[in-house]
Length: 449
Ligand code: XLS
Ligand code: CA
Ligand code: CA
Image 1 (cartoon, rainbow, N blue to C red):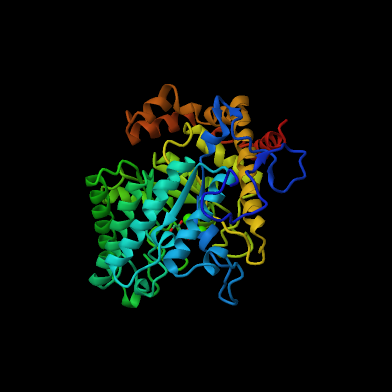
Image 2 (spheres, protein in one colour):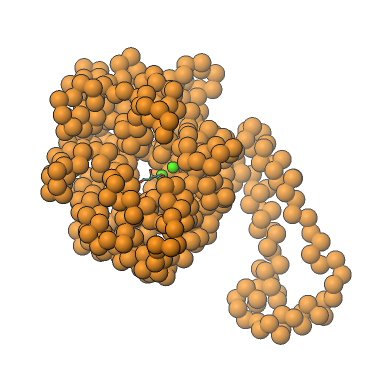
């Protein structure tokens, strides 16, 4: 048996453990920049980046789109006797992939891992059967669970919402999934539990009571938090902001919206943000803005690493390959002292016409390399100090004298206005923001100069 497959069958034959071969390598199945054990700022790349593999895109997504049939035909499905057998085989393939690519973590939805049964009890039984297997495979391979989540968007019963559904019965069925998935996450020592509210928004105000829906959503999240904590879950709860798709007016629009919501309902101690790059873009922000906003609120948690396409408004979930974006992302993460919870979860999929099994590896390799480049460039920004010092200096007038008094809240508006009156207009405010200069400095770090 080869070193890196775990079941009766090897699902990615001909591909062995992906190795670091350096920037000059022409091997598409090798890392050019991601060198797991290399130390950056005293910590290995592996520990900085905490890569996670998304079960749904990598082993469940079939390549189908609204205009065409599936193109990703998986042997774990075609060789299976029934849905549970397929789920069992799929898990072998998943752990083979995790270990061959060298990711320390994975993430899953309940329905990615196990099929829905004829009733909630059977669904739960299916999930726990697969959880037992996952537990064994985690132990054998050392791969850990970054977070679990309940799949609450696919089934038609959620067409009117999940926790915000106008029918109480649907909310109760959603609870069966969240409870079971929390149990599974706890059993698998999961480090987090994510809520993504794709159906928690509305399409028409004519049939919607926004106040009631938001209150119900907060109550549902509170119950999930309380249940998790009661069962001994010590990990982090995450909310993943997204403004739209599949709903419109999604309640978790962006980081600022979610931070306000969590604080309003007293959930801000247990929940953090899981920021997805593609979702930031859909909210007319960029990835760096969402990360910095979460960090500024003290609520940054984890990342769904991907990218959208700047020329359309869809959630295309492509692999992140822009060094510019990965550098800015890693800069934020380094500034806050690295991941304390969470990691870089590849919520990304190969394109519909990428039909070679090797493409799944190549997609992940490219993005792991891109984050490795970003990490090193971000460390250069910090080591060199030009950009952080510029920012510090820009606000220096608040660090001493009257500015410091103002910052400490020791001044009234009258006192503040008197300072302005005494100073007069002069040239106050005519200070260059130096954006072009800073952009040029940043480009130098990307090139390693
Ligand atoms: C969908 C989301 C989803 C979450 C997990 O847009 O990205 O995949 O990450 O439910
Ligand atoms: Ca996501
Ligand atoms: Ca997405």
